[in-house]
Image (cartoon, rainbow, N blue to C red; front, side, top):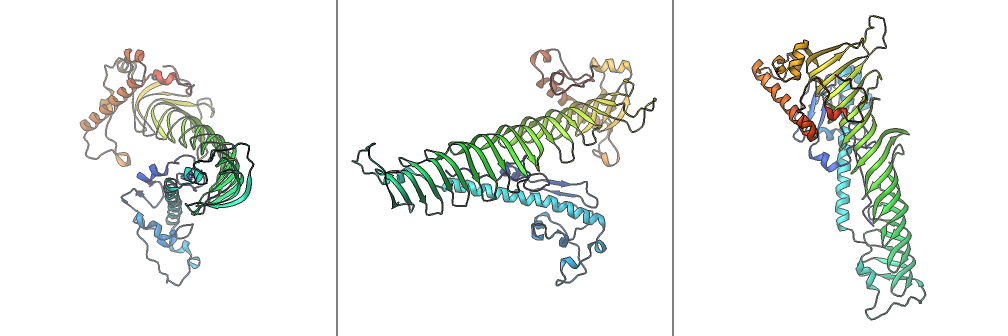
Length: 497
């Protein structure tokens, strides 16, 4: 026993108890990255080598409290705003609304939220490393202890009766008090190791076997069935030092099978299957009784197909890859009037998909319930490339989009040429101006060349994804929905073009 401590606490921008996604803290720590670009009055980018840009200085005094201190932000390189206050003046006596604008206070509160997530990941990483070091050094229920009380020339007599309780102190420093059968610990007994760990319960021929309770040196507790000195069987209960509780099946000292895990606050809960100590298979993660994710898991991460409720109230149903929304899926946004079905990559729309929404103005019949569609290609969560617009009447218009902006409509003749790959539509792309500018130095020719490379990569990826028979048909990027998407069971509203 000694392999059952887990601390999977990491969540993007939220409290450390609601952590279904990024459980591999060591991987997260390789490249910690936070972006706070949408906040008013603040633009912050922090990586392992912090590079901070700020439109306004954030007072360090506002960053104190909330379960962390101002020194936690030294690595962020934040500048401080000099305050017209004395050191003896308490923080509570300061009227922040008079000293700072609403934008500064709002930015600070948001930054605190990101910092709490960062600190939570640090603590989880340290706990994980502590467990790795502990597991490599822990030596309990060893063979040397088991055979230390046996004589070399003695033969075991199955008819002999138990004796005890008797006390024996091992060479390792461990101390056993309980029943014996010959030279074996057998029956009821308890053992205390020199590092503070202990076991009390049933024994059989020197092994912890039956019902018992094991407490390791750092305070984690397992209570339940044992087999050959390992946690093994049904309804084993493990409680770690943070108060998280797992109840379920065990196999050879690992969580394995059906189980329920409840975090220390009692608000977060996972119920599902485990394999080799990790969430694996089908499971449900909920917070305060509300289901956040239900679907497939792999190595403690959402992986496969499932249904996920976003923090803003939207619902995604589709494929996941290593804890991220990636693959085919259906996204119902929080306002319920907008739906996207198609491809995702790294949590954003990327590839081919259909987006439908209700227009803000009524149609010709004064009807607000009619929907309009965009069906086509996406890049970086924006319409980009060839696409089809379907209005309230069901009329189709073929066009070209660039980073969310429509560049032009195509005539029927141009559409036919594009289908035949006899028209280079990339010639219509142009460098964007203003805040969406890709590069101010790019000329028209240079930018068009870049767009040709982008479309060429799309074609290569499309042909790589499709089966051999589809590749022989020379399927390529066009207005038509790719065949491999049409075959996806997730997509139900693609319009045949």
